[in-house]
Length: 363
Image (tube, rainbow, N blue to C red; front, side):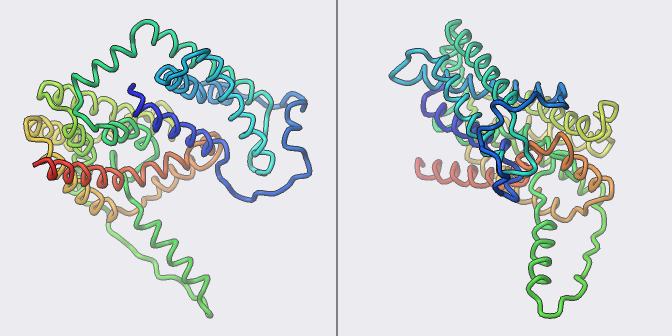
């Protein structure tokens, strides 16, 4: 990872850690305890394997990224120690701030697990760097990617995480207008002198053809964005197959987290399968098209996809899925995944526009 790319990725992950640690950012109050009192508190009565794994694994990427950042810098001394100390200080600060959030519980064990996870990630990154993986990564970037590919690469890396939050249509992201309309209605009702019942908008379910188009566009857009920075046709074909595999895996994982492992592929019906097949055919057909044309097509596909998705109503099953995500173990990261799923298409529009403008200046 080049130094210019390592900096934003590292700080983006730090922001993610802060978000996950302090979510839902509500009801801040002084609870009459010192923010460091958790350091000598009794052992927690209830402890789950999920909590242990989440605290350990959640800080491993941070430790790895910090080591890579130090190795890319001018001072390369003690990268593992520096990464571990930074992660430990960050975790200590987050646990202390959790003392002011009634919905969160500060824990010494969480802090120790976070620090241990960062140490493991740092050691793994250092071992990979000494084995030549950094040189391999630089060579891979030069061979596969065009210059100034950071924006597209960041979007493609975030795409699987954005798919984790349940969507009304498989691979559909950016469905925000119903939520915005509800928020505006609530605001207007709150400010009205004589509040009355808000009108209920009833929308028909998406037709199978519209649902098929949403699935196809949702899978096609990341392929088109990838074509903006991947230059070789052979590499573009490999990217298409990789993105489809990752997209299926992320959507299946989302279903498994929501309903259980037995429902991993419940979303894969004839309509979504046909949409995925159509996306594959279109992506392969466009693999030899110039990058600027693909950026324009990606912008068009994003507009169509967002327009169709925001006509899709929330079914009772979808509402139940969201309720499951917003409770229990998903409280730590459902908000981030939700915002990522909402914002990803609009961020992709901005990246596509920037790519078109950049190409236009070169021409």
